Length: 356
Image 1: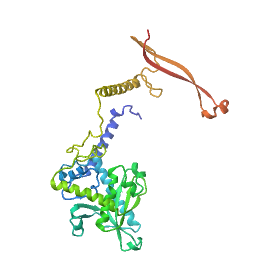
Image 2: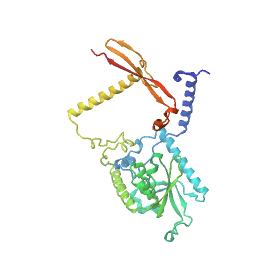
Image 3: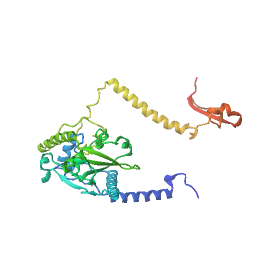
Image 4: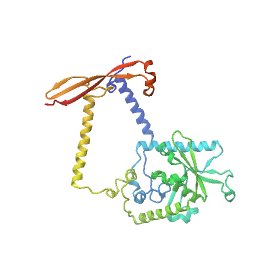
């Protein structure tokens, strides 16, 4: 069977590629487009610990203008939902059935009227029975909140405890405890469980006690957001942060202070930077043509091992033998007589101007 050397021109490869694209497009079409939801009335429990106050005000006032989730994001959300249901099934299989799954609360509810001014809403992943495992003072607590979150394997080792998560450098991780803390308030329970999941690892079940200090700080922040929303005004943008601002759904209508972390540069600095970029671009062009003309031993270029002249340019090749021993270097002195010595020719080719 003949193997095509140029895959890009192979009819079989092109047909397979078209088939792959058709399957992918149909799979993508099954993922429903994300439509922004009306966010005007409440701060979402899953969001309000976000580090940018202006972002939270945009969530309320400009929810219609929020960027949609791209196709990779929609796959990621679907995978997270699937994982959540799988975790609930696992718990049920071992006698810890989840109740009140996706139950919706907001501070306009009658039983939460004392928190009405906060204007918070949220959907809890569920409640799990304590099965009488809590100590005496908490024996009356029959169920506690459970929140399930998926994270990248890259962050797995930095999310071992609830304190790790509270202090995490990534805002989408550090805001998780505030969400569970809110559900502890809404359900009048002293603690709950955070279940962290990642690819190829056993789920990590992390206990969390109600954090009064965290709740107080979050309440102050949320009340400030509510004040801006009532006035239909915006707080000043936070200092530009490449991660936070780079992931913002409202970057098209916000003006972060991108210069706050920049130092002033002189005209000489600018000249140096221009020279640096010119040399950098030139080096890439040089590396590309070097690979094509000379290359390496494993991928020789068109002139490697050749001799030639063109005007005042010469291509010169030097050849010299190299002894190659087929044994580890550290035991060569002891076992040298027992091993074969191979001669290998080394080739060095340079392109240079002819010296006068």
